[in-house]
Structures are given as C-alpha cells and as structure tokens.
Amino acid sequence: MTRTGSWRPTLARRSFIELPARERSRAILDEGTFRELLGPFDRLMSPWLPRQGIVPQSDDGVVVARGEIDGRAAVVLAVESAFQGGSIGEVGGSKMAGALELALRDYDDGRPVRPVILFETGGVRLQEANLGLAVIAELNAAVSALRPVVPVVGVSAGMVGCFGGMGITAGLCSYLILTRQARLGLNGPQVIEQEAGVEEFDSEDRALIYAVDGGEQRFEMGVADALVDDDASLVRDTVRAAFSLGVPEVHRSQEFGRYGELVERAASSPPTDPASLRTSWGRSEVSQRLADAVQEIEETPA
Amino acid sequence: MESLSFSFETELSAERRVHVGVVGSGDLEVLLEPREEGGAEVSVLTSVDGYEHVWSRVLDRFFSRRPLGGRYEIRDFGATPGVVSLRLAQAAAEAS
Image (cartoon, rainbow over all chains, first blue to last red; front, side, top):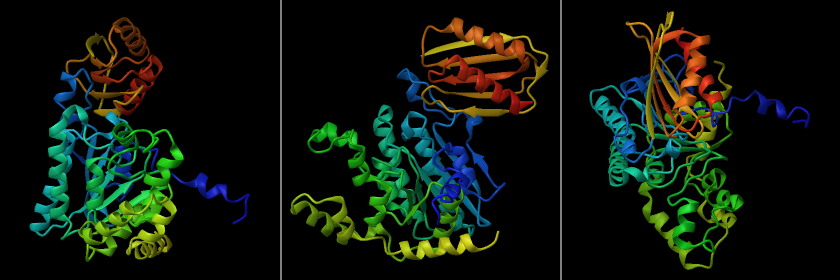
C-alpha cells in the first residue's frame, strides 16, 4: 500500500469505539432488526444511586437489544461506559443476567438465540457493593449455562476496557474479540497501585498498562480470540464469524490446568516481560480459524 | 443532587417519544414524551446544586424559540448550558 493511499481506509472506517452503547448494539445486529427490551422509558433505574446523591440513568447504563445476526435471532447486551464508568449495578446487571436466562429458556423451547456481550466496564458499581457482586455472579452463571448450547460472544473495544468481575465474565465467553484500544484484566491498574504500591504498578504509565492489559497483548497471550481494528463493520463481521464457528469443543476457562501451570511458572520465575509472555502463552487455538472466517465474510458480496 | 420542575405554555406538541444523551460527565439525558394536556412540563434532576436560575433561563430561551409541548425528563451530570441547549434541540428535532 502506498503511503499517500494508506489513510483512506482509516478515514472510510466508522469507529465502533466512538459509538454509545445503544448504537453499538445497533451496529452488531442486522440492519433494521434492533428492538430494545427494558429501554429508557421503562425507567428501570438504580434505587441506590439517588440515596447516595448520584443521578441515576433511565436504563441503568445497560442496553438489552433483541434482533438478528446473520438472519438468526440474537440478543445483544451493551454496557454504556459514559454512565458511572460502565459499572455494573443491581438493575443493569440483572437486565443482562435475565436476558441470558431468557435466551437459555428460548433454546430449551427450540428457539436458539445468539448472545453477544459488549463489555465496557470497570466491574462492580462500588455504590451497590454486594448487590453488584451478586448480580455478576448471576451473570457468570447464566453465561456458563448457555455456552454449552450456543456460543456466547464477547467484545471489548475500549476505551474503558473490561475489568473486575466483568473480566471474569469476559473470560467465560466462548469467543472474545478485542481492539488494540481495549484493555482486559481482573484488577485494574489503579486498584493494583492502590493495593500493592506504585513500585508494583504505576497506573499513570500508559505504555505499561497497554503492554500488560492492552488488547494486542491479550490477543497474543491467547486470552482473546480476535484482534480487530476500530471499525464497526469489521466488529460486526467478526461477531458473525464467531457464531459461524459454533460452540467450541473446549472453552478457555475449562483449561484451568494449562493456565494454572502457566501462571505458576510466571510466578516462580524472575519477573517476566510482556513480550516473552506472548511467546510462552501463545495465541488462542481458534484465532486463525476465526480470522479465516472473517475474511470469508468480508469477501462475500453483500 | 437537586430536583427542579418547570412548566411552559406551548403551541405545538411532541409527536413521538424520544430519548437522547447519557448521564455522563458534562452531559445529560432527555426523555421527551407527548403530553395530551398540552404545554410543557420539565423535570430536572441535576448533580449540581444551586443553579435553578440558570436552568430557568436556559429553558425559557429554549421554549421561546421552540415551543414544543410534552413531558421532558432531564437527568443531568454537570452539563454546561450550551450542552443542555443542544440536547434539548436534538430531542425536539427528533420528536417533531
């Protein structure tokens, strides 16, 4: 590609990151099929935030949308990162868990529904404490119940990323799609710094954060299956491709033996660097098949 | 956090319900619904206390330029008057 031409594809892209949660859901679903459940006018809001002097939001920061993906019934759960940092409260988390439980019931009734979760969250909403934790546990139970029968596809695009209990939810997904701007982890940089000190992790060092938690590193370490550019149609096509692969034989989170050994080896040796982690952990086994499936979709005329 | 309410005489009425914006830093959400009784009823829940006079002026100006009736429900997270005006205009444009 020539240097003068190389900016054109970038300019032609429609950013996924810049879209709010509702528009992200719309972008994932087939055109014209978006239908929201428990939307803003249902006013299902957090009862806990106003008691702490915080303004709630009419959808509690979670968009649940039914529609179709590739002509098949689907449900997309999207977290709005601009509201309370994408934190998961009792109401928003229950909307997500409930939608997945309904998807499982639909499957049992012979109507499979393709579930997608768009993660943009710091995890539990601290103002709702245990209720937030409980609801993420419910969500994780729902993902675990659903994934043996239909793949659960996760996407984190950035800029908030996916941390805390929702990092576990992302880890339970059948397929996980990230961008370079995404970050994925359990304890976020600020939490590590607060708990273990700035010598352990400097939460203001962006290069360090992306070297450890960044989408590219997570993909190269095999804890995510696809690394895509910030392009709404590419994200949509990658989600479609993931469903075309079907339910994986083994889910990543079932390989705790392998990961246990890798973590133990990393913990017992001198501090390692992000680059050597890529080599020793290696990419996800399905990443190549997923990339091929995306290419096939991209090359098929619409 | 402060809760405010206002009402205005209007000529027109919202034709459909619309939702715009997000309760994020420097932004607000507006839920606008048609109101059979006519007129505009505006409820504001804002994270910033003590700005009732500013809300009153921003809304006065909006309804003098665009007298669109309906039930306006606003949840604000520190939006500036400019952002408030833009969100109101966006809601009105989508509802008429």
